[in-house]
Amino acid sequence: MLLIFQILFILFALFAIANVVSKKKEGALGPKGILFWILFWVVAAMVVVWPDSAQTIANKLGIGRGVDLVIYSAIAVIFFVLFRLHVKMESLKRDFTQIVRDKALKK
Image 1 (cartoon, rainbow, N blue to C red):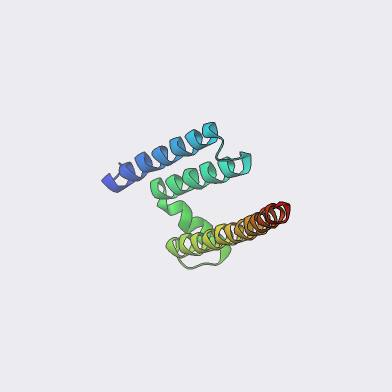
Image 2 (cartoon, rainbow, N blue to C red; image 1 turned 60 degrees about the vertical axis):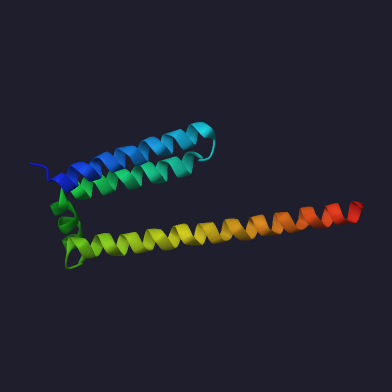
């Protein structure tokens, strides 16, 4: 039997996936982004519905508790996304600087 939290989380995950699909239709997300976010929300929902699965995987990886595995994974994903955002911001900054320089030289 599903707990209220599990039902609410599944509904939230479905809402998040619908939001990802709508961003795809708007052209705001590419194929990699769609795959990443849909996979993320599906895995998150699976861990919430079957919490013992996280414990089983954690035991196979030598991690004490399933919740530790979830936290370690979440931190790794956050830092990966943060790194990607940083690289993208640096690229945009370089592009913006080049555009401003080109425009200033034309005047």
